[in-house]
Length: 295
Image 1 (cartoon, rainbow, N blue to C red):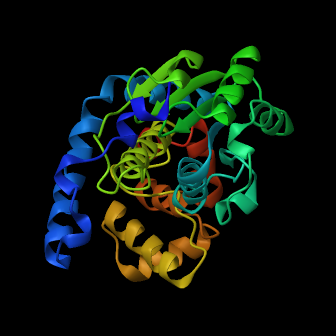
Image 2: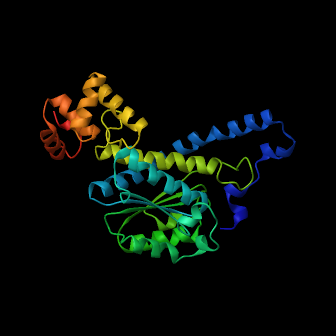
């Protein structure tokens, strides 16, 4: 598939005169273009839901979600993976973001990394990829060799595979069990896939990680009960979550959080069921981490 055939590389007829627009005109036009993204993502919900079923199954089996991409696509995967740690209290090994060229590529372009069919498999071998894992290859163009090589290797070890592209009939779709293809139309700035394409990718990754975590008991109602209180703001948020979940006072929330060794979920179970720390831990273990199954 040549670049000139890709929707993401087409010129947007509405923005031909960007360099002549006022700040207001450009902002209004860009905002209008951005509003198309959520609608485009909605059209891909069936395949997104299929992907979430795979990632949830992986997590339940003790496997991992592994994002892979180059450039903006890779950075968005790394970002989503990193944010799962404080938000859901998982280890950094549970959701992993790999970018072609490694950590250096988060800031600087690494020559030729995304064009390699062998670099992706090597990165997955270094992670000791197994059939419990789900690999999600992300590429706005839908044709990145780094991603294609990774997906092929993942399939060879019977890992679940998902592709995420911003073009229809994307080559990477042929290398994954579940193909997510989203069309947001030509970019505001021709070929700049960090714009609408990147926004769509971020929305999909948010859905995959968040709903997968819901599926393994990382939330109670709509609260982040596995949040890690690693700074002052998050400590106060943790107390607020406990108060909201149990309708207790600030003082009770503070005291119980301390008694629960700063574990929000355990503190909530202690209050809701009237048990001590050890008993709350046991209840959660028996309920596979779901608070709503402890009473």
